[in-house]
Amino acid sequence: MLKYIFVSGGVISGVGKGTTVASIALLLKSAGYKVTPIKFENYLNIDAGTINPIEHGDPFLCDDGTEADMDIGSYEKFLNEDMSKENFVTMGQIYKTVIDRERRFEYNGEDVETIPYITDEIMKRINIAANKKKTDIIIIELGGTAGEYQNALYYETSRILTLKYPKDVVHIHVSYVPTPPHLGEPKTKPTQLSVRTLNSMGIQPDIIIARSEVTIDKRRKDRFALFCNIHPENIISSPNFQSIYEIPISFYNQNLHKIIQKRLSLKYRNPDIKNWITLLTRIYSLKKTVINIGIVGKYFGTGKYQLRDSYAALFDALDHSGTYNNVKVNTIWIDAEQVEKKGTSIIKKVDGLIVPIGWGIRGAEGMISSASYARNKKIPYLGLCYGMQLAVVSYARDVLNIKDANTEENSKNTKNPVIHMIPSQKNIIKRRSYGGTMRLGAWTARIKKDTLIYKIYNIHNSFLNKKNYTVSERHRHRYEFNDKYSKLFEAKGLIISSRSILENLAETIELSQKEHPFYIGTQGHPEYKSRPMKPHPIFIEYIKACIDNKKNSLL
Image 1 (tube, rainbow, N blue to C red):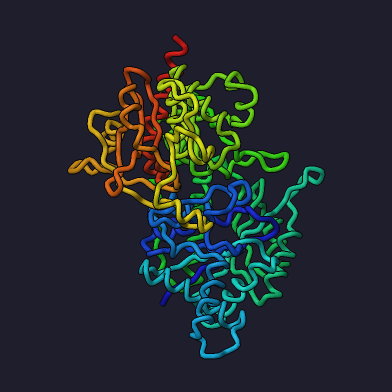
Image 2 (cartoon, rainbow, N blue to C red):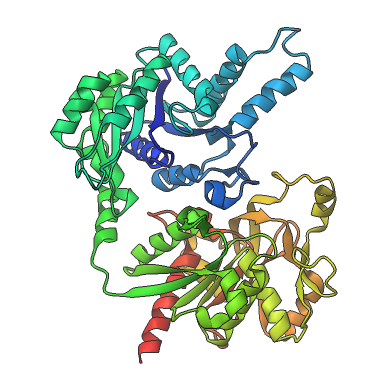
């Protein structure tokens, strides 16, 4: 019998449901169960691809082309498994499916209402994911916060399933427990009210994950037990940690895996998390070297505040590779618009520069000048997608002396579009079909031997097919290197080091290490494939180049 774990959030958004789900999934998988997580989002977008990253964080890209929520990235990193479209559902997908069926007269003239048709479709999506993954336990993350009208139908679905299968469902509520500075103690009242909201929907949580700045003590647990009708041992403390990878170990030490298995009437199995403990030891080990990496981006700001989530996958990849190389990576956020206005003089001393994913003309000239700055100063440079494209523009202007070179994305009428739109994309854009129409998902490329990118993949050969020198990376773009200029670039020293198998498109560009210690642009997104136990080769070697650059600068 399939077992269900519903995970809801209380008091605030961004409380940590995604890492909670990933941690629970890790513990159960490590105990030998087949586990599948699935995220249900509230918004009416079909996917996360058209959402501004400042609004909802960096969309996570799957191998199958699914543009999902960041939490899907957490699932992949903790479980070391690829997620797919079955693991990510939006309310927009649900409504569209039901309305499309109604238009095809598949409901035989019934009046189509939210209940049971929407809730039935939600249940169907849960079962599709469970069946495809052949899972024992499915963990359902309910988007948003308890009490929002947008997610009420997800909660209603969980209530219906609990009524049908009372011994096969666990409801876990992840709720924020604030510690106001003027009081100095954690306050349980917000969570009490959040649980009361759940009760009003016919749901009684079995377990509370108390998210807080500090560890929850016995007194607070007793208050939860009294007012939330939950056994004290089922209150799990989840304070802030230096690393999110400590969460599953904390849950393990509080016997969360035992509580869940007992509640679901499962035969007890003890998780084997030795490798996770080893990882955490490496993360927390003393780092003698600190490297500073400048990220020249434009999605850092949200009002008066700065937002890490806009480049979440990139920061994770840097952290993974920093741990692998036993160095502390200090990221310096550099506003591309400020570089555009004030020049590269605002780039303080850095050991490496990265220009990440981006869209549109805002800040583009700042990114182009940053690519030039890294090239001229021999600073290790990594251009990711847009960063690769703008490095090409930089090279065309500086080295090929094509002063008006540009990308068609930012200058429709440029006479020298060294980056242009893929021809197959032009008709799509004319129809204003933006969502899910880019070059998405995993694409295979063949790498030239005797190049830096080949050397990188060859060292870490699990990513490289040595029979035909191919690798697969995830893509999310619709503009490409314009091959009409390839001979000009190559004659002036730019190396096109890999091309796609299917369309022969330029995938990576680089400079010879005789000219520059590390200068690579990749059309793909290696950051989406980096995992704590298996950092991506490009980031591992990029960090090494930054370490070498730091050492050389001290000589």
